[in-house]
Image (tube, rainbow, N blue to C red; front, side):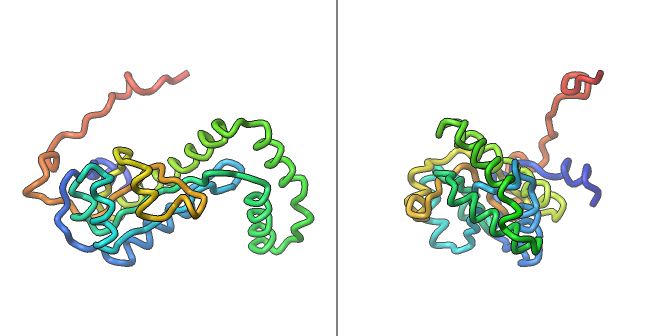
Length: 209
């Protein structure tokens, strides 16, 4: 399926049929998420993949009992770092050094630049910046799911504190930001399954100069 056809095919599925996603398709979606760009190359989030049925049942009340949480195949939680410090930057430098086979000392200027940029932000500004990077990864996951013909529903409508508690995120220095449910649409039970996709036309959306 071509990309634009896949994106026209996808929609925010409201009811899923319980069918499991093949492991290779899930792995492709996760690989796409991993390849998402991020400002400075720093990835200030973790991606939590939940296929376990019991855990998803525990999460459902915190998603206001939306059925996709339990009727889908997996829930993917994008959890942003609560703090971004020199420790996280140093770990990132070590990753670069190992993966590119360069001395970590050669990255001092880059490290100083990142640390300087972070120090010029308030904690609130740093959190907004980190959340923006998290949403880029979300977008890559949605596009990859469409390309694999896996239904995906992005979700902001949940109680973050409850999700964090179920998954023990606070202890990991994380907080839930956004989620995707993955699965297959219930062709008979989803009222949106045949609904026309509504978007602005080119004249309303694009400004070309």
